[in-house]
Image (cartoon, rainbow, N blue to C red; front, side):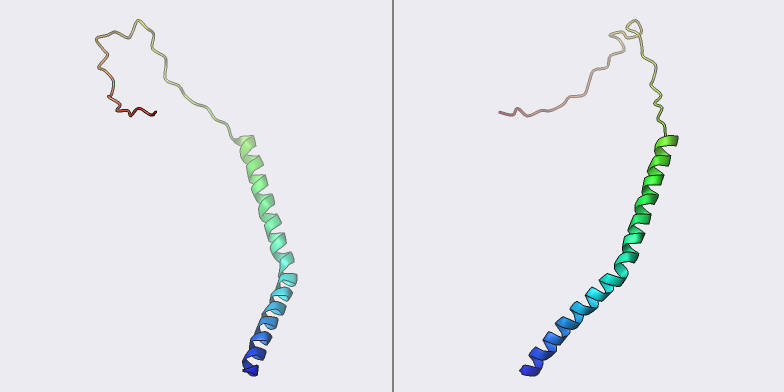
Length: 84
């Protein structure tokens, strides 16, 4: 039983040490990659905002004279439920 507890304790301590060492050495690499990614996204957003523009073509408005009651075919029936 004592061997099992010692083995489990050794495993937990070993994993904790390896995790700490990897975080120490690889943390800078991941942080630098994250900053590069952030700067690239920012540059792309700035480029898009400078070059991007929006133009919406609207259909010409019809005058009242063009619309007659003969052209009106009626609307769709919309079923509704009264809310109290």
